[in-house]
Image 1 (cartoon, rainbow, N blue to C red):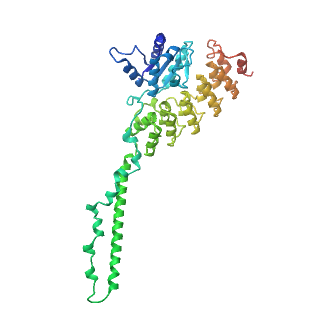
Image 2: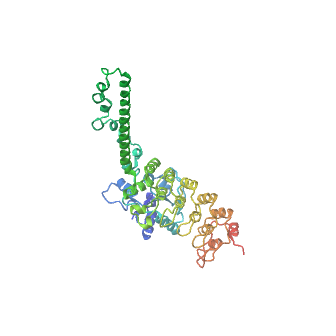
Image 3: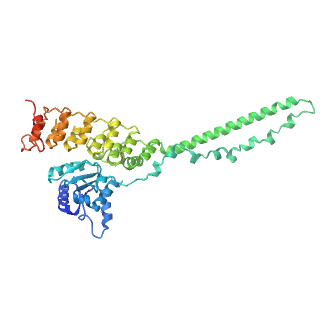
Amino acid sequence: MGRIFLSHATEEHELVIHLANYLEKNNLKAWYAPRDIMGGIDYDKEIIAAIKDCRAFVLLLSKNSDASEDVKTEVYHAVKYHKQVICLDVDDVEPENLSYLLGMRHRLNWLERRDETLDKLVHDIKRIPEPDSDEVAQPDVEVKPRIEAKPALKVEPKIEAEPVIGTKPKIEIKSPLETKPKAEIKPKFEIKPKAEAKPTVNVPKPEHKIDGTVKILIAGLMFAFVAVLVIFFMHAGKYASWNTTLDHKIIFNLARNGTPEKIRNAARAGANFAITSETIGDRDDDVMTTLFAAVNNNTAEAVKAIIETGIDVNTVGHKKSGFTALMQASALGKFDMFKILIDAGADVNAKDNKGATALIRASWEGNLELAELLLKHGADVNARNDDGCTALMFAAFDGHPKIAEVLIAYGANKNLRDKNGSTAYDYVRYVRKGSSVRKGKGFSASLLQRLKPDR
């Protein structure tokens, strides 16, 4: 099982111990320095190796960690090796030193040290597929034997047209054209002693030369044509199937780490990107599509290149969760990929294995920017999950008043009830029907009034 790398400043040592214990109670193995560094081992190399092998990279973001050059180096390597970086805010801070590396990544608020936040962290981490044991993340995977496929349709290196047509030992092209010993039939037709028949002598001689030339040219052209076809099919046959396990591993390597140009070259050479990782031996829970893998680990342009191969963007991307590529891009806050997928026809109202849409998840996670983006692209504001819960109920339950206001503005129905009969208004006040009271933190009196169902 891949470990969870915990990056922290020295001042947050007690917090990282608490976090590590919490993760390990939930069957997630944590790794942090100096606890997990063996004596006598090169400190820097051990940290980089741990980042390479980790399942997820959790940053305890504080004023101290933002100012730490060691933490900045760790985050740099996490980004370099395409690791999922999760920011856990332990201070009220806007990063300066780490702002470039962190970009627009969604951050979890742990300012109040609530275990509910750590439950959310555990949930998010368990959605991240385990790292492939055969394929340790590399900054840039070179797969030249299969990927540098430009010669696949160019047969110049193999054909060498001039030697094929001019192979004197086999065809002897030059000799038939210069057949003076055989074709020199002057004595046979030169019958001057018998008759002055110059016209008769001149007529058959040109005819003989034309017939011989045509036959030789046709034979030479046919031989050359057949040779070209044989060489072409022998050469192209290397890329004819792309159906072996090794081929599929190359395709998934490209999806995770390949450049857009290498992806396009492989597609032109016959690589089929409409496959799942089941073909390379992934377990049922970890089975995913190449597009889903690209959303997890690669760039927006690589995602676009895979879409250009003609795959269905609405295919379930991850078997266990039921997520599509759009849901995963939404969950990871990768808005550039989100827009590419929307332009390619991705369904904003697709549901996962629990019946939740991307809007429901954005409302639950408190991602206001994503919720607004989904609504602008036609997300169903009143869609329900398998428990009958709506996005408004999740916004109310998890204390996100701004999202609740946006949902109401887009027509969220406050009178809808879940399978237990609870409305969004009930969720503001109760964790579950019959449980202890939970006050709606941040919900103003006027907003509570707007959430109150009609009687």
